[in-house]
Image 1 (cartoon, rainbow, N blue to C red):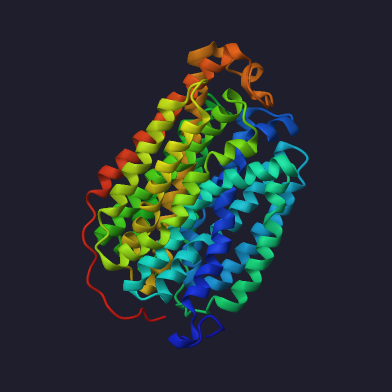
Image 2 (image 1 turned 135 degrees about the vertical axis):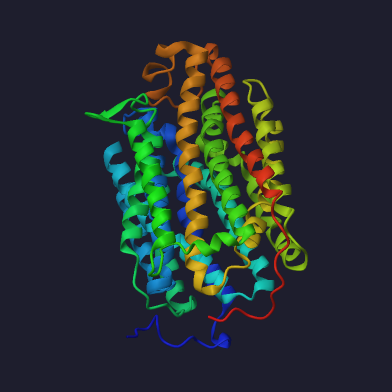
Length: 499
C-alpha cells in the first residue's frame, strides 16, 4: 500500500532544507505568538467582553490545554501519515479558528474558538521539529535548531509587542485577524518548499491514543481549574483532586501499555535511553512553565501599576526580542562547532537573572528606562537557552523516531506552559488577597475590566503582589538549570540523515 507520503524518498539534492526551515518557522512563529499575544490584551478583553480576570485567563489556558493534550498523538501522526500533510491540516484549522476568535462576541465564544486554535497548533508543532531532524545533517542541525529555538523564544516575546500595537491601533480582535494572511502565505509556501517525506506503514496505537489523551486532559484540566473551583467539587461527587489523581493514574497506565504492547507504541520508550533526550525533556518543562507564567504578572504590573498602554507595555520587551534574534546565528554556529552541553545552563541562569531583576524593580516608582535592563538580560538568556536546548536534546534521535521525539519534547514544553499559567493564576490571586484581603482582591477590585493605572493608594500593594508572583518562575527555571548539569557530550555522528 502506498500513497504520495509513502513513496520512495526524494534525493537529497531535491530538498532545500533552509527554504523548508524558514517556511515552517513562519507557521511555528504564528502559533507560538498566540500563546502570549493574549497576555497583553487581557485587560482590554476583560473590558470589551465584560468578564472577570479568571475567565479571561481561561482564554489563554484553554488554548494551552488544547495545544498540550494531543501533542503526543500528533507527533506520531506525522510519522504515520507524513509531516507535511498533518502540518497543512493543522494550519488550515488554526487559521480558520483565528477568524472565529476575532468574531467572538462573548468570553465563552472566544474560549471555544481558542480550543480549536490549540488543536490546530498541536497538529503543526511536532512536524516542524521532526522535519528539521530529518532533512538536516546532524552537524549542521545546530544552526537550524538555533533558528527553530529562537523562534520559540522570540515568539513569546514578540507576541506582547505585536499585541500591544494591534490593540492600540485596531482593537483586540486584530490580534487574531492578523493570522489570516500569515496562514495563507504559510500554506502556499509549505506546498512549495516542505518536502514529502517517507512514512512507516505500521498500525496505529489506538489504545495508546485514548489513554494519553484522557490522562493528559484530566490532569491538566484539573490543575487549570483548581482555583476556579476552590480546589473542591466540580460536578456532583467529582472533585478537582479526583480529576488530577485520575489523570496521573491513566498516564501511568499509558506508559505501562507502551512498554508491554507488541505492536508499534505511540511513544517508543527507547527514546528515553538517550540521556540527553531525557534531561532535555525535563528541562523544557521548566522553560515552558517559567516563560509563560512570567508574562502574566509583568503585563498587569506595567499596565495597572505604571499606567502604560498595551503598546507601551509590549515595547518594554523590545531589548529581549532584539537580542534573542540577533544572537541566534552566532549561537547556532557555536552549537555546530563546539559541544553545547553547557550552553543551556548559561541561558537558563541568564533568564533567571532577568526575572530576578524584574522582581526587584517592580515598584510604582522605578524608572521605566531601568526596566529595559532585565529585558536585555532575558534576551541574552533566551538566545543561549532555546536553540542549544533543542539541538542537544534531539541530536541523537534516529529519523524514524523524529516525530515521536518531537511530540514528547513539545508536549513537555506545553505541559509546563499550562502548569505555569494555572499556577500563576493561583499565586497572583493569593498574593493580592494577602495585600488587600479577600473582598478587595476579588471582582470588585481588579477583575472587572479595569484598564489604565489603579488609584494611587492601591498601586504599592498591587506592585508588591506582582513582584512576589514573578519569583515563582525564577525558582522553577533554576530547577531546570540544575537538571541541565546532567547533559553529556553529543555522540559522534557524521553524514546526512537519510530521509
